[in-house]
Image 1 (cartoon, rainbow, N blue to C red):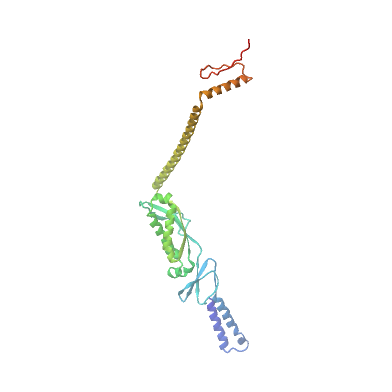
Image 2: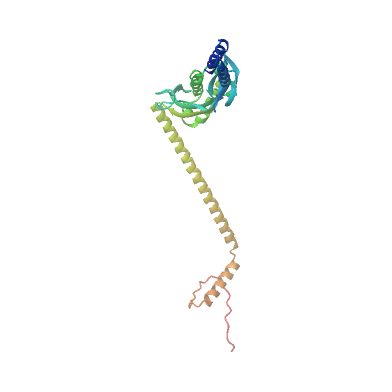
Length: 302
């Protein structure tokens, strides 16, 4: 628009200059040229906002250089097409309110067993700034519809076909997401699209298959629980066995140390304590030839 205003102002200026106007009108002939100069300068100034790059187009040809965020002076004849380089998300889901496509947009894929599963997925990606011009030239501004969406669907179906339904539904979901990510990077990076992450959000199975997997998971969890209980019982039995062995060893040591001499000495010491105790008036000592002490009874002189 500014370049057209510049041309119009120049034409008006030339009319004033060459048209033979006299008097006051001739004195204003510089104004159109001044306006033309202002419009020309303004036409050279281009602003690219944050999170964008500007693709330069001159006479239908895309220049292999983009304008980054900021103020730029360019050829006034150049057209600038702005493209976002911010992170974008593309979601395909069974829920109607999610994703760009309204309605059930989940990806239906076949597992290694040939079972059909519906996958909800979200992919984060962004344009590579330096090659945004190439995306615009080769694909256009609707690159998400033309390239990103088909690549996501193809990658998910390729990866799902190498895994069992149990792997996708439970145990190896992160590994499945990683392989989908790797395949997407391989397909989209050469086209100037950088994949940031793949989120495998939900896996929908046929009811019979889901019930069978849930029962299997429950059985595995119960088996793990029983294994833990058995390990705990084995540890407890081992502890009791060690404790019993220690007690038996202590009893053997004590039994070996109880000689007749020691028992006689201990017996005499105990009798002395009982005799000297103020709480005992009568002491009945059992008779045993092996334990009867030799008591010296004092006798009087006659």
